[in-house]
Amino acid sequence: MAWLLDYLASQGIDSVSLAARHGIKMDQLHEADARITDESQAGVLREAAEHFKGHSLGLQLGVHRSMATLDQLAYLMMSSATFRESIEQGLRFQNYPGRFSGFQVVTAFSEIEGEGCFQVHANDNLGDLRLIAVEELLSAIVATSRWVLGEDLPVTRLKLDYPAPDHSDEYQPIFNAPVEFDRAAIQLFFDAKILDRPLPQASPQSAALYARLCEETTFSRSQGDVAWRVAQIIAVNPAEAPSIDQCAEKLHCSARTLSRKLQAQGWQYQQLVDRVREIHARRYLSNPRLSITYIAHMLGYADNSGFHRAFKKWTGISPSEYRTKLFG
Image 1: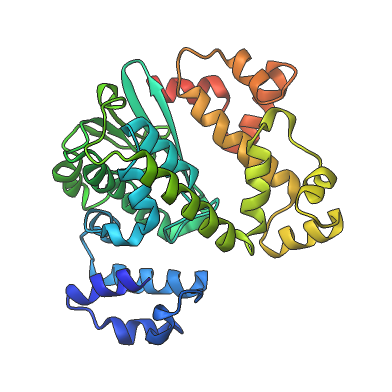
Image 2: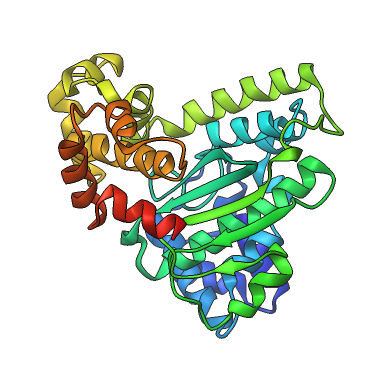
């Protein structure tokens, strides 16, 4: 939030007054354990977006994002041995930074027929903030990759699941690749040849240090985010998701307590199981080499019909229709 307000100030916006209107005191931003509510952050973003009418606040935030906002995670990614390893670490700790961490926006990675592919899943319940969240994340991937690689990410194409916005002409200078709107998924493709190239600032010892620091920080921050912690447990093996009792045992509480804490965050346990499976399903379906039958088994469904019904409930279309939209 501190960096966001600094950036808005650089654009001529009275960020101090803006923050105050949404219940944020500037002194809070200098406290390590300070927490800004989702409502306050959303209010700041909505009002800031009004100052960017006709332009994209999200794209500009991602492009101009400072490496300092990623803190230890930035150093972990830069000191990784290869870009592939850097991506793995970035996704492992993707809830570390950002205004839309947790299950509002989730990024997955696949390697498909000579291309690397970042696939972004953004909740529709973000409403008018969804476009800002997606654009900020995509442009931040490009900016972060430049720090890590020491050169531009060789983007080959970008697919987006929303209509072209009024500021669509801002995409080309940032991604330098064909952009397709109204597609089935949000996917950023790049040349996979760069994945295993040694990174210029690789350092095994530094990577180990920063990984440990990220683990400690993520654990500390996630203590109050029970839904995120539960989702991580489910994601270990979504095909055999633990029962709520088993999950509660891992979190050292009763199933009743866990259920109450999830409800306070707007979740039921089965909804989280379904959300994790949906994210995995979308990722697997983006790989044309995986059959729908195989994907169904990987997600714990005994047959295609069960997977078909579940996927249609999640997305409104069947797995085959989703795949046709992806590659059609």
